[in-house]
Image (cartoon, rainbow, N blue to C red):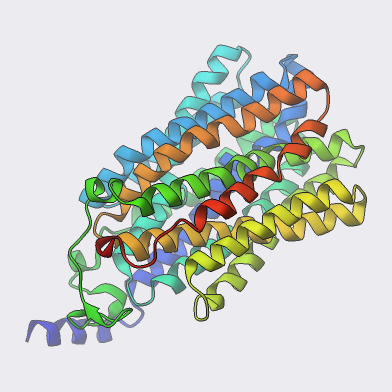
Length: 420
């Protein structure tokens, strides 16, 4: 009788509420990544010129934000599993806006570093990890489709915000450009998080996917397995293989997303064209995710992930071997597609292997270990540039990361974590 009442309520309500949440997260994560992550690379050169700081100093602030975001993710994951994301993601967006205004008015490198530490905490509340946790709680059978929608839309973050940020920088100067982005983030993200996000479908008298599920895990045709805790996940080989493989790839992927535009400017490309080319990586991320989704019907996620890593390896070989405008464009296609598919591959592996009951905490724990790599990437590339006066050495070293990830991912055991 209870199940019948739920079904009737859902039919009366029309569109399943989870899809409204997916739509909101698609919009807000696009804005969050565009403003807090991708826009940064546009401001490296104007900050360097006005403030006289080294590229290492400027990159250190951003790297620390990524580091803090990883540690903050532990608390965020615990909160999301326990209380949901509405209040946390709303407060995080408010904090991000205030900190952006602080960045726009900074003159002291110490204050600048402290501001980015705060932005790192805000990142932990508005980036993919909290969004994925919310989606995992609202969807089971349609989780892949829901995740794909969020990441497909957010994949355009760099495509939209790098040219937009470059335009604002040229028209207003870097300080006012940051303030304009802060206003944009605030007027859209804050109200959407506050008004639409909800913890779980059960809290609204709904069920996952908007339908009643059978008492079996229909994805494998077996009885539902016992939820895997964080402690149990840490004792599996799968957890560490995924962490090490994606960590190796993140060293290159994340670091180069920050430094690719400055690299193009060093090569003499026009800033507008450089921003366009760098932003095009986002559109190629969407292409990679569109390719990834149907491949899941034919290959295991492990095999697909290995292919993604090889594609990224090929991208950097192209960057080295074809240092022309055509080579840069081919690099963007290969790198963007692999970087975009990489995000979905990690989310799918974690959900498939460990389930969704403790998804937030398990994913955040994995993110904590990845944080050390993600933090080191932009700052180390900036340091190598400062020491050598060019990105030549950085470019020569980068193919090693996805190649290492390719070999590590084959160590991933087959089956669920509970079967290992």
